[in-house]
Length: 129
Length: 451
Image (cartoon, rainbow over all chains, first blue to last red):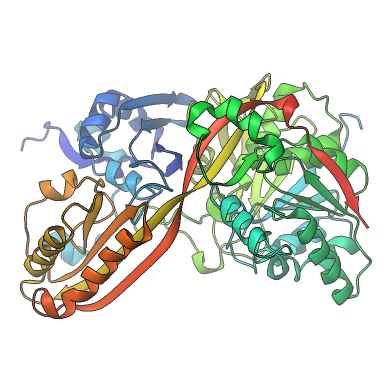
């Protein structure tokens, strides 16, 4: 990899978020760790990308709402929850865990933005391996 | 009141039925230490809580309110009554009058002045008198349903009236969660009923409060990414609402957790759809241009909220009896565990042929990300996980069909793959749900005081 090649990082390194549910509809917030990362999220975490990422859950519609002053996006996914909390056979019938599924979405991060990524504290020993 | 009315402190001591009962004390201590006008709210109703409460009331006329009511109020009721910090809660659930009687009995036990307890009712549409209204709203979908509960989401007006009339405790059934905060703000500041911007700001303050610790570091921690100090002692939130409805969110003194721009953003967007049109009975709130700003340690200001005219209709949730949910689990561990768990799932599918839907999960491989139809699980390559719990579930209209799953999982002990252990089975009645809208004038709130 050359110094200028984009880094591939999971969305979790660039954003945090939370899932909510109402009926058979799920909403997942995606909030940039740093304002500098927000345009990257807008460019890459699109309705199409999110729909494809959740294809196994077969949402009938994915809608993205932008909140530029919060450096955040709100995704609304329709008919994702197998009927919702009262009908689903899922252990997590609310779909509470789904934000962390979205945070696995791979991003292409240009080198000049990599300094804004959030990475967990890694011990020196692990870093060497 | 005028625009010079002092800031109102709204503390939240519960965000759902089953929340911590030791949450209220530090919140009340903080409200009293800061002085000035304050109110304490309890939000204890999730969507299905009301249906369970209604069924409990049918079994026992003195039941059907929040089961933890006494545990939640006992530590703070005396101080709140003595220091005139009104308590507002939807803990009345399906039986606000019984909740009120329990609160009065608790006050007597505590030896405190008998509080003036107000009921806000009118949300319950389950009686036969309302069937025509529901039939109009639901259409043919309502025919033949065994309805367990039907409740409209009332707004803040009834709460505000009760407080203006001197209530020490306001007991409601189903009201919109943010209305627990908007009601006290309306009563305190005397805003006009169509002051949409101010009502919207108070609504979003209420939205931040309504899930309790979810804005103060609860439901937030992700070690290495989002670390939260003292999570085991997470404090509950307090909003400072000014005469224009603007708010600063903080938390109880001397508690764990944190309030920062990240925790507030996550909760601001929680269960929101279009951020420019957050529908409540009181207003259509718009956070499209809202922003948050850290203004001190564990203090975040929310600004830029706007409001639009409130909806002409109220949302009604209808729950009906919908058969049975059956679940069974068995564990496999050690070499070949995943293969043995997968074989057990195949055995169940063959034995329960025709029983649909049938969901299978491999806890330890994949479980909650998958869909009920099994597309996700089928797409996961077979691995060699060494500690796997097979979990299967079905829903069936008839109890006898649901019980077949329980028996087949149990039979895996001797008839299934090697080394299976720890069978647990469970079955419970299901509640189906429908939502509809009704004209608000058909569902007026009733306010009355209990003596």
